Length: 204
Length: 204
Image (tube, rainbow over all chains, first blue to last red; front, side, top):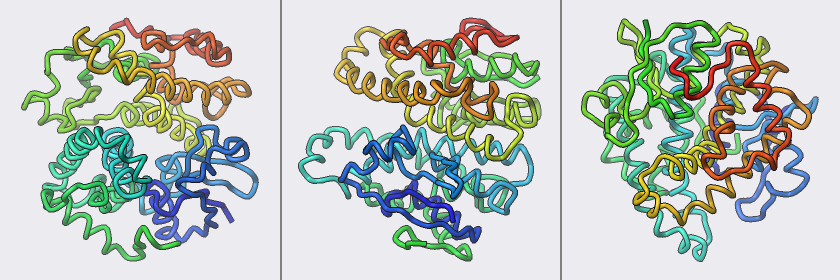
């Protein structure tokens, strides 16, 4: 069974747990701590020189990091990817948008405001206004799309929705107010109503 | 003919120009300025609410932003993508790595140190050490891979190499020293020797 090297409260790891649950792909979870440096040990850096989770490890030793690449791989040819090449390109558009324009602000604000040690947060406190400005800009881009679409790509729930859901539905942890984004709020509920959905806290 | 909305000196736009040249896909360039706010006008935000280039616009009005998504779309089914699903996942792994762990430091340092107005740079000067630390970490991850591989995915030149080449070969603009990374340096030359290669400065 493939091993998912992960942190339970990481949205990037949640994306993989949720997709694997929806696709009935069994995985074993191997947990790492937020504050214990366990993804920077020599042993872990041999598995992923970039020192990050999620990392998927197959029984034959093959390794795949990066949540976007893992989502793509697990879902190739399934209902979680659109059939047409154009719609797949749009799906990847939103997945790259999430990692470049959304996660570095929405997820980073959540980490520092909810999970970091208080003395560490104080060193980052001056960055909070920039995280909120850029995170709100990303939520605004999502709102514009969702005003006229139920889903991000191909007219159906896909891994683009999973990628954007992870840190959007938990954005309040970073001080964001989803009530300002009614189309995003409605989409968050739409995702959570999908058959087989599991919350971030669930182990599988 | 598709229009590429672009900035000439942007590495993200260069990726698309290079791929389109290698694949003999004709495109028309529409240029935007670095400092004139032309990607934040109401007209441009209608095309891409995220206010960024590159943006590919087809004659029928279809729009695709995000360099990674454009690269993927232009090269689906071509020699610039590996044939096997596993190798394609590795290709995407490196493309997501580039946008999350490389570009925000290597490209951002290049922008501020080479292209920003001097008075603007002074406001960012305190961030240079962090950009250099994280950018060098990303170059180190590339070095580890390239010590034992000629290319990033599937044993052949692919869009993962194009994605990483754009800001790596120009990293000196941001104060990075590629001489510290011999395997990366050799790979930079390997990419530039590919038939049909065009430099960043070229219009096509």
